[in-house]
Amino acid sequence: MRMLDSGVDRVPVSRPGFLARLVTALLRLIVPVAALCATLAAAFLLREVPVAEARYLASLDPRLDAAEWMTWGLVVLPAVFFILNITSRRYGPALTLTAAFVAWLLIGGALILVLYEGLIVDFSEEVVPYPEAAAFAGAMALAQLVNILTFDWLRGIPWWKAPFLAALMGGIAFVVTFSMRPTAPWDSALIARLIVEAGLYFSWALLQLVPTGMLRRTIRPLSGFGGA
Image (cartoon, rainbow, N blue to C red; front, side, top):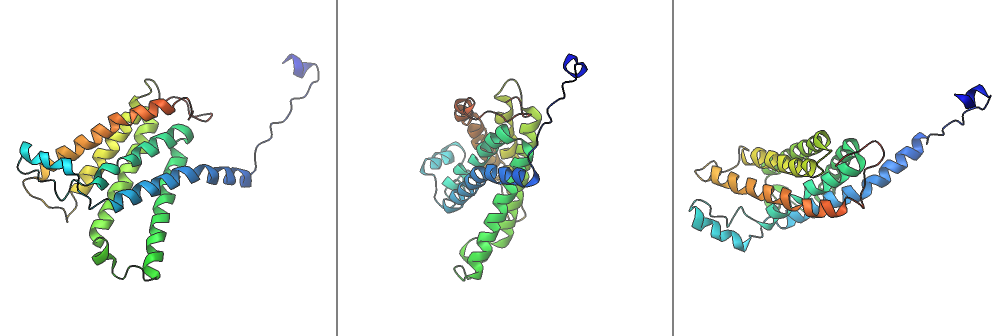
């Protein structure tokens, strides 16, 4: 007030223009979008590679013959939520949602290009049936939304609460939604499989706190995104 009274004008704050903000947002999207695409691609490529150690599940419950459904693709898939958590911590929910959306656009575009070029003649026969692919995409998109909203809601102190519960809730949302699809095997082992898969996502949510804690000093929230 004294400066204003003495006739000293305030220096106007210059704000970046629309183009500058757009370029900045695009640059920020590169790493999370690439990481999401790589993780989903790895999960897809490993979808038929069984986890040898999972055969011991059958000794706990004869219904848990995991030879077909417990694959390395299923084990790798929860890394999606770790990527979303780190992105949410740094840039907030809006950019994280955009990154997830762009990743799906790129994956869809890549599939369309592959089909157009004739590298895949029959997607349903050579890759995966269309209903199952649609169910997976829908379940994972819902799980990503749950993860991002949960992280934004819980970010704060203690720092581990948001990443842990966001990864866990996102994983459970995916497991329940995808397992309840019409084409899923509705048999006596369904509940047992749900419990095992929920345990997998619980373990992932717990273990990802280690790299999250190690990266907290390196990846700090931008101004306006405090906590977590």
